[in-house]
Length: 390
Image 1: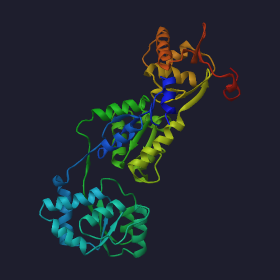
Image 2: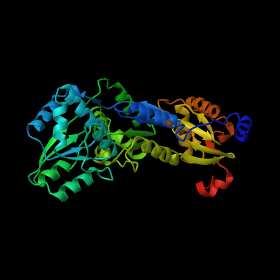
Image 3: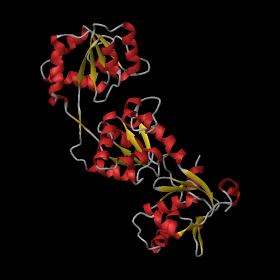
Image 4: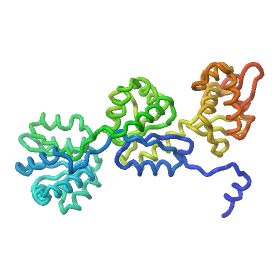
């Protein structure tokens, strides 16, 4: 029963760490960012938060007021509710304008569709009952139902939620429907663009291991800011090769996919599954090598040496990655110098960074000095056949 604490006493350098320990994750969300950040930190990640957008308060949105009055003057046949927070906010805003009861009365007389279980809960909390909700929580399934029923001549109101609905409105209009958008809240650029710029710089310099996106507008905003700063090619290169772009769902991924960026998405479009996906993906991408009798896993800003988490300075990580690209082979000082950001032409910088790297790893024999040639990882002989003749 007390065996684990005994093992920890025998291995004082061993640390308890989560699956994301040693990784840095960027969070672009404005809404529920604290929740997402807490989920990531609880699993060991370092988090950089840079909200790419802000939400206009509902009560200040004149477009929503105008759309609500339009529906009250001419009731639709169908209302599609897409998000719980959006539907709830719509009713709360209407209450503030003195139109709440009129809106609920109108909604009781229409065919009310809910995109998923959270939206159903929000609808029922207002004393309403939805006519139907898709099992997949997919707007594509909602569209299929509407088109199967026939929409010619019908007036359909769609509660928008700041994200594009590609093809949805166009398909309904092509089927003969009149479509009214209900802009429940709007996205605006952040008041302080500094955090976004810092996240962009961290991404293009590979200072983050993953970027998370929970809305399409946030993804589009980050891409737009990178383009304004002339960093778009570098950002796309980072997201294509080294930095994992993780989206909460397929709609969120569309701006990235339009730029040719492949993303990962959880099967269920929720924050919890998104974090669990990162817990699987990031460790699986880490380089693991058998070195000097130890198992060494190279993560974003730290190294696991036999399950002991060893934080490593950025310069040391640059050297370690350069060595790991050719495990067991000698890497010249001049090549290692080029791997050090801002090191200039002084090879003494390599020796200084290497000394700090060895100290950080806690096991100096992991890296061998080859006199007058450079350094190499002390790859275990049994690994020669896998990594080449050393």
